[in-house]
Every structure is written in structure tokens, then in C-alpha cells.
Length: 142
Image (cartoon, rainbow, N blue to C red):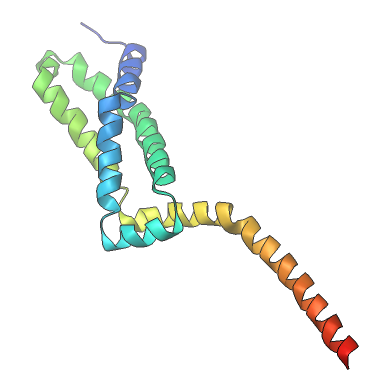
């Protein structure tokens, strides 16, 4: 029996967005935030935003898995549920392993720049106004 890539793609997408997978990913992110690097990230970035970014990455990885899964399913020896589950587990695990602290630093940097960029701009504007006002007061006192 030939399994179409389209139906496999829908199935993989359904699996990747399932509450069980989402909970597994959320648990891994929580686990990462208990490490020293994770605690540092927790100061700078919202853990929920990191979870959301990881969830999106893993969901996108599902589309990369479709051709692999389709090829495996074409051969009847790979229709064994346990074997297929192991294959999917290894693919998901490899994608989660890519989200190590060194990769998350880049994600956090991008998020911080986006989130805090305006804080820096407005801080400079208000700091300049206050500095100018203070200088005017000092000059008028003299």
C-alpha cells in the first residue's frame, strides 16, 4: 500500500500540534530554564515566548519529516507501530537537541532586541530631555 505524502503530512502536522507533544516540548523548555544558562535567560526573556518559539520550530520540523516518514511507511516492515514511534521519537528528539543553550542565545538576542529596542530609544530621548532641563536649571542659577 502506498501512503501519499499529503496524508502523511497531515498526520505528522496533527501529531506535532497534539497536546501530548506540546506538553513534552513545554516540559523540555521548563527543564532548560532550570539550568544556570536558563536562569540567566529567565531574567532577560519570558519563558513562554521561548516555549512558543520552540513549539513553532518543532511544528515546522514536522514538514521536514514528511518525506522521511512517507518513505519509511512505503515499506511494510516499517508499518510496525513501535518502530514508527521510535523513528518519530528520534526525529523529535534531534530537533529538541538543536535547541541547546548556544542556539537559544541567538533566539533570545533577537527577542531582546525586538522587545527592548524601544526601551533604549525612549530612554535616550527622556535622558536627553532631563539632561537638557538640568543644564538649563544650572545655567539659570549661575
